[in-house]
Length: 592
Image (cartoon, rainbow, N blue to C red; front, top):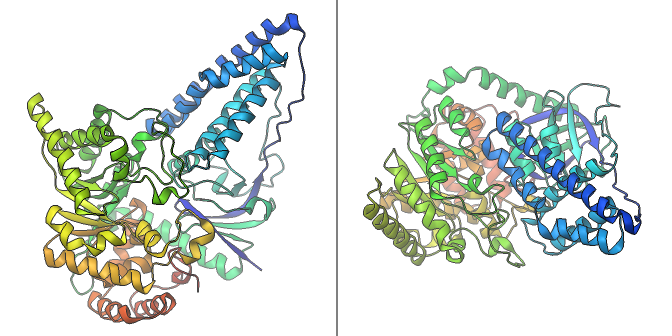
């Protein structure tokens, strides 16, 4: 009998293959001392090991830069800083000189202290720091002692493999050979973790946050990894295997027909043109958006600029990144979302904050209150980039008109500065993310201060239903089909249409089959999704009779349960599109 484990989607795609369980060897460094007259040489041995570890890290960073890009390579910068951290390095030296410990024992104790301190902090950003620390520890110890080489593939019988592990450090990730490993599933992790970023760059379907999966599977056991919906199926049935194989074949067929499908317009059977835009995580994603003939960029996430950073990105660095995407997408418009930090995205340059619930704490534009220069630098970069092409500016986590007034004031100040400095610039259209119930409730008032809107379904569901979207155990309650949510989205679409403000949905629901149909039925006429989902969504749109869909969905505003809504949408779709795999193609609803 099969078992489905729900986790957090980290890298899209489908992988079907045998599990390869990775259990890293436990580091058991014995308590050992040196004679007093050996202390000097032991300290020197430790410092040499740190220098070699630093050299190896730089080589690894350069290799990743060549293979995957400069953004991904920055992931290793915090490790280099750790190898120069006086608390870590000199603290180890003190253990050697004061307690006569061997270098490996002293370093291991100091690392243990750091790890315990950080884990006690219970902050979202801690897990990346711990992963980096683990990498640094292994690299230094490899110079000090003979660590056993772990050959994951030694006892494997061959064939496509899905790597299952408790966690993966960045170094472990870049060592993976995509020719041998076709998917990844880990107990811990988040979508924004360094390992997840690398998995997306490597194109490996990945699900994280799976709890105790590594204790529930064995090497050789068949698995299915659904990286788009965040599911892992253990020992799938023939029906499940066939359904996912069918989906895999459909994806490959779509990829083979890129040029033909890209030329088709996203127009419904009854002649309604739907805007179809791309969400970008990294600048390199822009090329894939162009290949799919997206109408433009509906959401350019700028958090990549702070990956691996211990200081704020400067204006010039941001301008160059924006310029590159504009040139790739030209003449299509690009919507740049300002830094949406906090929650599970907390770079090292932000001051440490103790929060019981980070998603209800310092997030989005609230961070700008804490560090005004963060948004100020970004505003200047966006204003300058807007003079080079079609740019729109999108602000996250808006709750009130006061929020918008403060944002406008910063933009006006940046504009005045650029004018005085004689730098070419332009004030782009200003958009607001509708991702809290408060924002949708006052959308008509916000419209007086904004040029367009974008709905982030992920956060809207989280805040409306009080469900932490980063908690895999709560995903069954993360319900796109909740009747209250439908009413809020319909109200937002109606208000935006009445007020003449463009409205796009850029959350994960826009990439989902049933989710997209539901959104279109509620009055949404513009979707923004991952580049690899654009062609599939275009095929879907061209198969729909939107008038019929809208009639059914609007009628469902009076429904009592999400399950009732979901089933009814499936029924009305039955005569329009292939529903072979609809029942398992969404992680945005209660499984029923």
